[in-house]
Image (tube, rainbow, N blue to C red):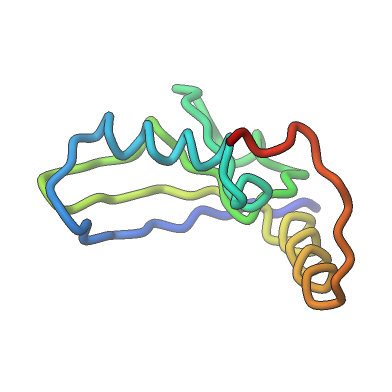
Length: 109
């Protein structure tokens, strides 16, 4: 049976920020950064664990659950701890062995 879990990160930011600033940054990272294969983003108001079964990402930021107060942020990150974990192991093995397959869309510059 597929297994999805959630991690809760309590972060101290380098400066005060708004919830929108944090979410905009995480959304941008999930779409255009070199980490886009590891980080995904959802703003679905009714997200539940079953929505993320089969996700290849290391984590999916749940925008609806994110809380920011001054320089503190709490992020809720979903992850498929079977298939998603296996995909990340393969990604690391490819990186270590120098194997690189093209991904689309390419990173915007």
